[in-house]
Amino acid sequence: MGAEVAVLTGDLIGSSRAVPAAVDRTFQVLADAAGRLGAWHGATTRLTRFRGDGWHCLLARPNLAFRSCLYLIAALRAAEAPLETRLALGFGSMTRAGGATLADADGPAFHRSGRALDAMPRGRRFTTADKATPAALTAVVPLADWVTRRWTLAQAEAVMAMLTPPSPTQRELAESLGLTQQSVSERLDAAGFWAFSETLSVLEGESRA
Image 1 (cartoon, rainbow, N blue to C red):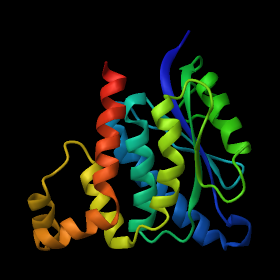
Image 2 (image 1 turned 135 degrees about the vertical axis):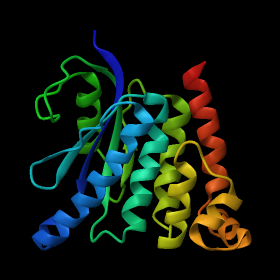
Image 3 (image 1 turned 180 degrees about the vertical axis):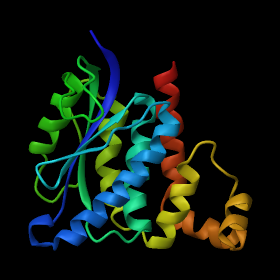
């Protein structure tokens, strides 16, 4: 039995109608954001592109999976990426680590994530696999899907910063963005970050228990 991991499988929305430059730009934003996640997980995420508009991402610390998903969604919005992505989260073991990319990696986490993406209902953008996923996470993901679609660029920028461990205080974030603390607070409130923060505390606390 391999190490327990989380795997994200996704594909870009509307890529068949987009020019190649838009697809490439979106993948660059995803790759940059996934690269930053590596510091959280203590291991490279090895974001790997496949089938033109599809991608895999490996999360070595499953307890940070929901935080990582929110970060990738926020990164695309904050960077004004030309396209958005669907993403499916799967938990389980990784029985084959593969090489520099995830092209030949394997295990239940990959299978569950891939099947969840294939089975995602029309109109949804974020889902989880039915097996090995904490019940609380399964319940909150549809709400996260709905809320994150409404993030503005400014809200996503603030959310990204607050999701990055160790999270800054609102005062520190305001100083880094050149804003008042009130402005930062308003952006985070409008993004629903207080609810995400409480959810993350529960999910990440349960994972450590």
